[in-house]
Image (cartoon, rainbow, N blue to C red; front, side, top):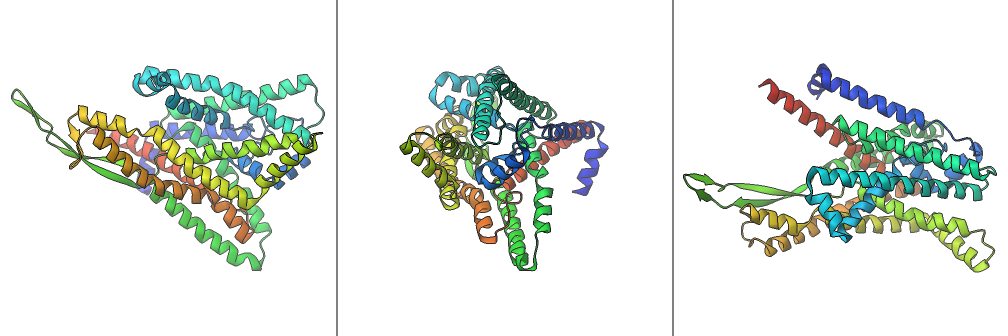
Length: 423
């Protein structure tokens, strides 16, 4: 490993790319500390400290939401826009054709539409957040001009991060959007550790040791599941054209246990936000029935057991849903048949698609269950040990480990290309 690190930093081009990416992440962290001065900072900190859901959202923005900074929404609107566009591929055949079958030009147009969709989503989310904080007495009385200015600044911050993410992706050191989320999560670890150490007492030693052991197990599990796959044997029929023979080889079709990655966690989190978020607007309603229903919903989503159960169920369901988007057994079976490939013992065409669908469903169950457990581990750990686990467990670990593994793979591929060039 150390030899590889030395090779990376000896290569001038790779070294400059890594430094460039690091500087972009530093710019992101600087922007996360530039506040919009329309809130009461003390009330804001207390509000986020008492609201577990908003605390989780703030962790993914590197504390930007808790500071009410220019980039308080992080890349959340862009991720939401990406999810919506991918859902549209299942509803509208034209969008699916543009995304999957129109080549590089189609994918560029698809990405451009995703960028356009990010703007109204950022405006809507920033307006909703300001209104929520205003109802809580955290935002001072502001006029219409100040509201428009604040929304414009927050939206511009989101677009700025989206641009930074694309600049990072161009260097092929990792996915830019994922690296920004990674930087936001990692930036919160020192503060969490310092808070834990400052309040550490001898009676908490067993809980801390247990927490560290569980964290190591979680990291090991994330690495194993991210790399786990089921290899389906594939054979290619031998074809003779003139004096040349084609095919007659065997290979495999890898099916990943976790094909959906971290998307189900983010999608489930987005869905969990809306009920409590909307209910908070109607808690102070003049209609007693509406106010009581809103209060009930708000309290339910503040209940740790109810929240954890709903989060687990949504992550489990969205894992299956997103896997169905990224892997189409029918399309794969047709491509195999076109190229003369077949699964031994299975007829090409419809039977192969049915077989792939059955295998994918079984291994996805394991991946979905694992993601669900990973999602609720922080809440379970916090309830059992009474120690904050957000920075070292659950979805944060999955994202951090996944981003690190992806970046390592991309750096390895660039090193391999340089080896070929030298040969």
